[in-house]
Amino acid sequence: MRPVVLVVEDEPLQRLMAVDLVEDAGFDVVDVAGAVEAVRVLESRPDIRVVFTDIDMPGGLSGMQFAATVRDRWPPIELIIVSGKRLLRSDELPARGVFFTKPYKKHEITAVMRRMVG
Image (cartoon, rainbow, N blue to C red; front, side, top):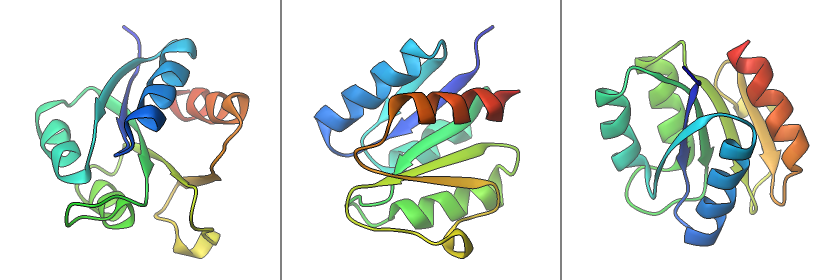
């Protein structure tokens, strides 16, 4: 069974590119447009191993709030956080969270995802 990655991205083209990256890396993917929907998915899908989320999202729950929620409620899930608008310092990230700026390099994200799932 292939590891499952949850992609959370409000921009449709960016979400499609992230889904392609995850699938090309050999993972199964579930994708949603926002953090609130992502929480619902996590509540119903215990097979998700990695969350790949943008931090700049509308809808009441920012990507950083969502990442903190994931870390609090689902500690084993790994976090990849991306942004095209902000830079994050390591002390701003949840435990074990990895940050990339957009545009990110596909091979770097792929390497991190593979390391995360062991």
